[in-house]
Image 1 (tube, rainbow, N blue to C red):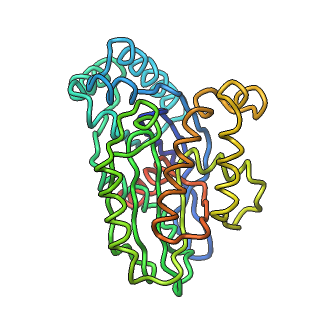
Image 2 (cartoon, one colour; image 1 turned 180 degrees about the vertical axis):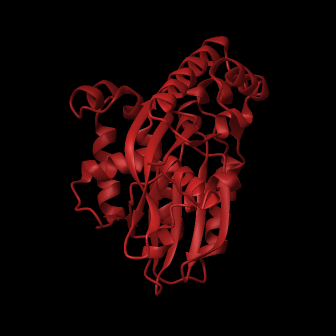
Length: 294
């Protein structure tokens, strides 16, 4: 059996997905089944956005994590892998040195990817195949350091852009007003001609919010419900979000700015409902590997 691995080195967490490649349906199309998913909350963004370089401690933690991932990939007999680093590594001045160190000590090649490539990897999930051709869609992926937004009309992406607005960036007060304004202008410009825009949300926070909402799978989350959840979460202190709501400490703080980003974008685009397909960067990387190895 073929096994592929995807590594996503984000600003908040680092993830490894090991997937079994399978043939699905009558036409024997290649797909995958998730085998193992490991998430380590390294918070590289705290260093990258505040100091513009990774500290020796963060580098050491990343090397240890990548060494563990390499060992897991070897044990699982992974034949192909792709490791992508996003906005924290893009902004760290010592990003290249860190990559060389990881290669030397953990034997993993890391690719630092631009926002546009990040967006195209997320599209590799081919969510558009399940879209209603009569509707237009705004695809929103919120990460720790950046937010990727795309507009789909007739199942085709007609516009796509990455903005330096993310949950860790907001927590560290590193989001800029001009970036918010630029994002608003872009959304208004690209959705003004469209009727009935529906949202699609990806990222760890929206997945968690969807689970907390109690909505049935395949049903959308309404703007109103998300706004109510945001108000409810905001009524708790950080400690209470961990103790009462049982959120992981590394989720309890970022979930608030994530809500703010989704709600703001939905409001600007007039989006009343958002679907949450529960896929992300690692799923996109596996799909990309499948396409590249056909």
